[in-house]
Length: 181
Ligand code: 5GP
Image 1: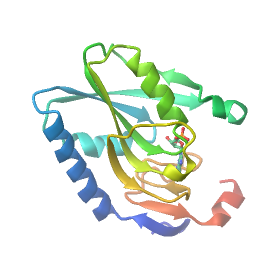
Image 2 (image 1 turned 90 degrees about the vertical axis):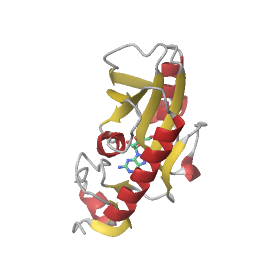
Image 3 (image 1 turned 180 degrees about the vertical axis):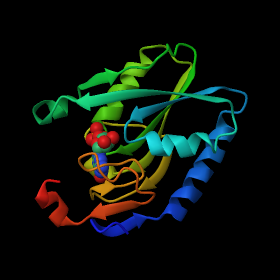
Image 4 (image 1 turned 45 degrees about the vertical axis):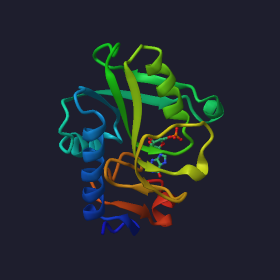
């Protein structure tokens, strides 16, 4: 394990097995349809890359980057779109691919925003779910793992932009937060 880690929550093997199963489930559900996977940067990049290779239905992917407006407006759930989709999604079968759903504010906003663009269908696929912190309702159609309220890194998830490349999910040691790394 990385020296900054306190414990591994999900191993590379567990992740691989679950992502394979999710890909199979999605492939069955979307038979005869073309999926447009919308990855939310940067965290969902690693998950999306693994997931799309387990999907046997026709699939395309595109990305959005968003940032929250900060702590003071957090409960409003307003997020700023830093990078929008390259193309329109009208009539498309859209699958939002997210790294983790925490308060749900980001996804709640994204779902409403993308819905207004007239997709044929819109579903959410989240690698991790932390339901104990939910502030806004989110309907997660495909959920990788449900985890307790702990700050995790790895498999795309960062702390100050670090640890995204770890192939497993781990909890950071408290000293690492203290350092303000
Ligand atoms: P929400 O709007 O659901 O509160 O925010 C979700 C976003 O918060 C995720 O996309 C992720 O960037 C960040 N986040 C929430 N929980 C964690 C966590 O445990 N670890 C990391 N690295 N990021 C998290």
